Image (tube, rainbow, N blue to C red; front, side, top):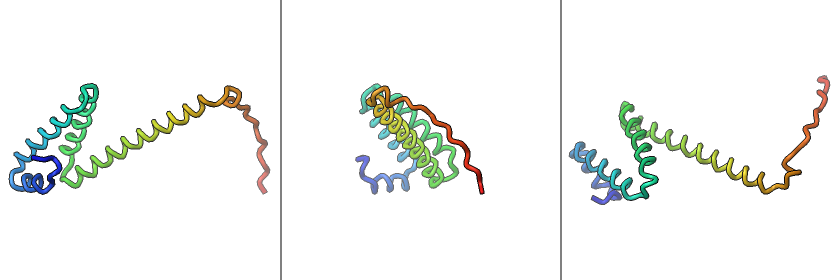
Length: 112
């Protein structure tokens, strides 16, 4: 069954949930097996977390929200890592004298 054939997958899920689940697992494992070996363990870990969120959810919508939150959290971590890398590279390109600064204290202004 073609993984992109939504209607066929939806019909299978409705008519035979056990067969759907088996084929879903096979499709996921097939994909993981198709990527380079150095990424497979990480992908299996991510899939384990997804499966656990699905199991903990009280209904499919809750599972979707949980998995979406996982995705956005991972996206935020990636964005932060990329920002740090970009800032680190920019700082490394500056001359040493520009990377150092003298902090000048300011006197507090009277409120009034």
